[in-house]
Length: 133
Image (cartoon, rainbow, N blue to C red):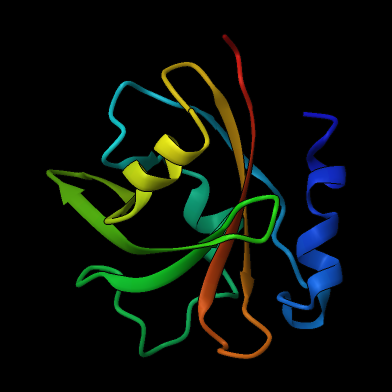
């Protein structure tokens, strides 16, 4: 996604990002499930390491803010699901609304970057995307 950096201009210039400290992008292709965004292995190491605080228990779910490329804010929940030996993170309670407002569907590709909101200090994400259809 060559346009990722261009799509981030508003978020950076609006002053949402604490000290301009963004994680590397985590890219994934969307499934048909618009209610949950499943973040596969590798997300935790690359996108949460250094951003989660000790008191934030993602197994119990934590409230996060997700921003689109225009700086619009969506409240969601981030939770770590453990099924057997496997574990993965899920963004929900607002993901459906995000997909609907941006006409995102199966096979579209997104990139997620993690940051701490400059004012609220809340764990936040910015999502950029590329429509594949």
